[in-house]
Image 1 (cartoon, one colour):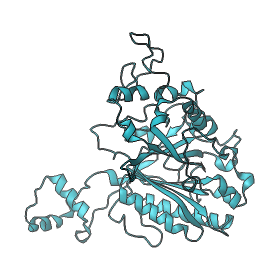
Image 2 (cartoon, one colour):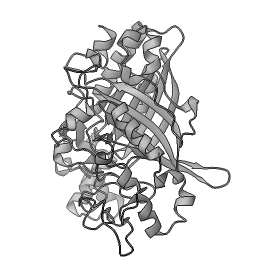
Image 3 (tube, helix red, strand yellow):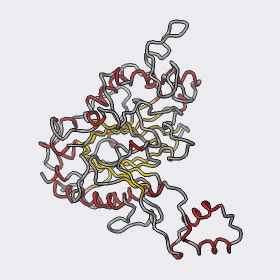
Image 4 (cartoon, helix red, strand yellow):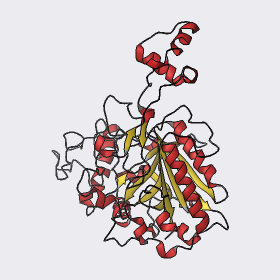
Length: 433
């Protein structure tokens, strides 16, 4: 479970493709419960009997939103697909589809056209193109993003083997793998994220209905993160082990960010249709929380190599202080152990290998013995998975102290093309080449 992850609340420069959608003043008849509550909260009015509420509903001109979370909008027609460089979202769904028997390139193209149209409308806070369920009627866009990718098997099913990137070769086996094939891989992959659970579910349902007879769900997983604004100031997210998770994630402001995360438009061995795209590695990593929580906090910090309270390296300073890998204690022992997770995952310990981690936590109930089925829906992005995820995971495989407390249960690798231009659908340059 490599270390790098994005902060839960994005800094302005990390989400350049997001805008606030304009709020329309509601009519008295159309004032929703949410708007009414927002009005009361904004003015400090204490509503007494029912008459007070009715009287306030008659003055919609003063209505203000309860918060700004619902008004944030991510753009669909962008250079890179949405859902990659945006900050962590409060709710997420990952779903893989397989094309049905008899469905090929023609049906796949029609499906991607439908999905792109639906994603564009929903991300703008509009209803689905047809048969909208009204689940998200009262909400704004809530930073909804919908991201599409193609698995290795997709190219065989559509007769496009010559267009399949070498980077989609199967991932190697790792010692911590206990993979369930029925919940791994897939012809098509969709990532949905939003800062409102109903908005995210609404998108999931619309995408699933749009699949029609062309594709069926292979597997689906649900995740969550801390809601933006839940902390007094922007902070790095914590995972279900209670650790700050994401201090060293690559940042768009870094000079080599594009080169590490996205396929270039020229000078690449990847096919042309992957220009400005990226490769997503998806892993369901179960955290063995009962074992982890038996450790003392100092013991947990030795496993990670960082303080649990503030994410600072054990060698001192703050969260962003550079880790001193050579520092020793009074006994001459390294302060950050050789097998500490934070030491092993550092890019300078892996030939510069880096990936943009953008995961969700998950909790799928309890096993019969009461063991929590919980952990991380690990999603990482890179221009080359062999130089990114595989390089780091191989190093972790050789002696990461965290390995005994986690288990990789599912796996997938997907080619995620660049964003669709105006008038295009995602994958059009592949399917109509």
